[in-house]
Length: 356
Image (cartoon, rainbow, N blue to C red; front, side, top):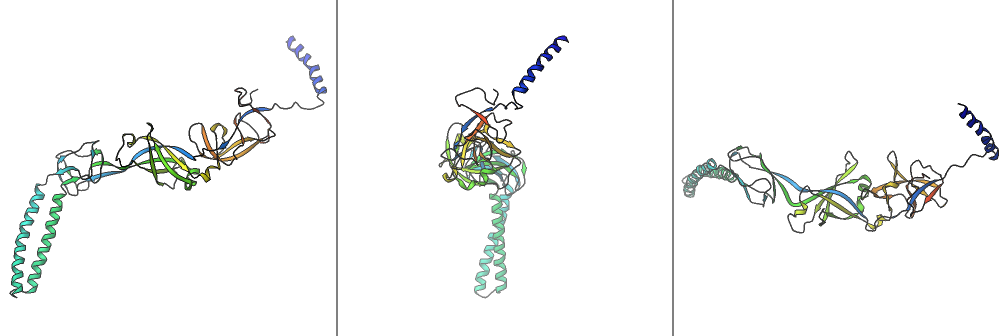
């Protein structure tokens, strides 16, 4: 206890000296140190990059047009089938009998109509009797064609070329008309889907060309199919592209489900409005993005910006700030408008964040 009293007593004259010597002036706050970069216009090619996924154009459910018992299925899951290839067949015995019975009846009535035609020419039968016989023959012709169609429907053919996605029935099972027997992926063309931010959706008129790159490095041109005009729960807009495979129906590196890189080039007139900067430079006030700029007098100024795209996990393209501006990239925490700062030299790796 005695030691504490002596220390406190010793400090009293020191405090008095400081108070007198300062003339009542407060000690100036320390100037914080920040690290900055000079931002420049975005990539001159105006290229935006998004993650995407390859998908088949359509999933097609293939079904018989008539009911029956499956006699044979000629494909299995994963098979590549060509348009017009026989997929499956039904037991057609009853359908053949139906066609045969109507064919016999049609032939008989046809002979009768031919006989009546000759009698009608000789005016041995009335016009009414002859016309009724002809109408009956036409009706039988329609019924015969219907039965022939049903017989033909016992064979199931691939409507397009593609891959078998699933086989839903087995041999000897009964199937109703319209019930999918197989599902297949239409790969006559492939599509890629990618999600873009709201700012990019609003600037979609500046998109000029598209390409898709696989993890193996293969690149294919693509064409914009459309962009869904409604954002999802993450405020992203779904963009769909059609891949140009150069005449090849399928390439091993462009299989459905493959993750790819989607590159979008923009009109050069719009590129100049964007600058590139690290993500570390961008702060948020609620949903408003902003950056800290440093003027010639080393005074901070807050500038609201619009994040156009994030090309990777470290960089972004933004609008609302001039190319050549000095932007704080480290030490931005708790900065204030009008605050004077010290700029850390680019070559220095110390004192980031104003810790000195």
